[in-house]
Image (tube, rainbow, N blue to C red; front, side, top):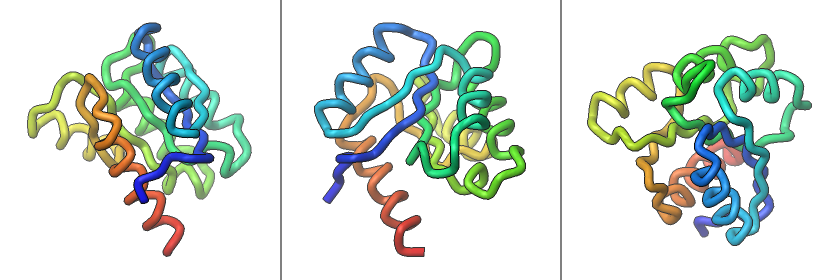
Length: 135
């Protein structure tokens, strides 16, 4: 039931190795992704995408140019309906309660610690996507 099959993610990750690993994991799960190197590029790419192109955004918190928190705030502030609804998941090595709170305060829906636990990511995304589909 926690399936990622057919989902398309926008991934903001500045570490090339982490991005490659995540891309491979998503591919194995039947999902696809587009990777950008920083938060500003994530905001620009989402702003240019037609509504529904991406099912969720996976965003690193610590990136150059624009961090994940600022990028999330910018995406949420875009004047389009899906900007307020799209699932945004923080990916960070910082897994303290305060880090989770900061992610949620920035407008992210969930927080997944690095290294990414694929089963937790699948559960997090599936629960949120399912709720979206039911509403």
